Image (cartoon, rainbow, N blue to C red; front, top):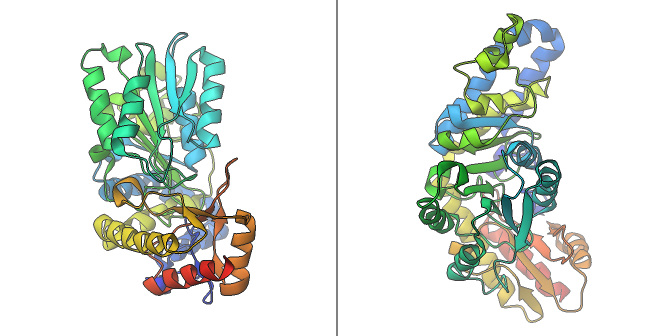
Length: 396
C-alpha cells in the first residue's frame, strides 16, 4: 500500500488526512488528462466532458452503495457545506440546530444562511468531556434540544477538534421518531459533514440514516486534490435549491432553446447541485480512479486497519505519564483522528519536536482549544505507530 504513494521515505506521516498524497492510479489519471488537455483542450473536452462526470458519479455510487443520481460533485467539504446550507429552503421562525463542536465551515455557512432567511441558528454542547463521552449522552443532548421550530440538525460525523465520532445512526433513528409526527415540510433534516469518516468508516450514507452527507474526497479517501461530493436521499433533495448554475446538458439544452428553467425535466437535483463552469478537470475526472482504487481495498478492510492502528496509538499514548488523551478509547465513538496534549508543553512545540527528533509528521487542531493531532491511516504500519509513541515519550 505504502509503495502506491510518493510520500517522503524517511517520514512517518500521520497527517495524510489534511491533504492526501495521490495513489499511483490517481496520479497517472491526473497526468493522462493533463497531457491531453494541454495538447488540445477543445477536442478533449468535446470527447470527455459529456461522459466524464457521469463516470465519476457511477464510481462514487459503487463505492457508497448508492445511486449515482443522488450524488453531486463539488470541490471540497467547505464548498459542499456552502451549497447545501446556502440552498436550504428555510423560513423565518424555523431553526437550524448545530453544535459547539463543529468547524468554522459549518458555523459560517449556517450564519450566512440565517442572514438571508431569518431562520435561527442555535448551538448546543453534546458532551462535557470528549474522553468520557457516551452515545447516550450525545443522543440525549440532541433529543432535549429538538423544538417544534427545528427544521435542520447540522452535525459532524467525526470531530476534527477532539476525534469524537458521533453515533449518527442512533441520532437518525431518534429523528425518525420525531418526524413521524410531523408534516413533510416540517420534518427535521439531518445534515452531516462526513469528511473525517469518509474513507475511514465502512458505513454507507444509507446505513448512517442521514438526509445529507457532505465530504471532500482529498483527505482519508486519497482522492484528487480539490474534489468533493454531496450525497442525499432522493426525497431530501427537494429541500435544497441550487445556487450555482450547472452545465449539465439536461439544463443547458433547454436554455439554448429559450425555454424556462421550470420546464426542465429529467434532471436529478443532485446534477443541478453540481456547479458548472470550468474546473481542474484533470483532478475532477481522476476521482473515478480514486473510488475504483478504494473499492479494490474495500471499506471494511480500510476501517478495520485504521481502527487497529488508532487503538494501538491510543493505548501507547495513554501509558505515557504527562500525556492526556482527548479522544475516546472505544472505536464506537472514535475513528482515525487521535488528539492529546502534554502537561506544560504547547501543542505546537510537540508537533515541531516530533518532526525534529523522529521525523513524525503531526498537526495541531485548528480550534481555540488546541491539541496535538495524529491520524493513522491505511498508509501506516504498526511500526510507524510505535515510532510515534516513542517520540512522544522522549519529549515528555
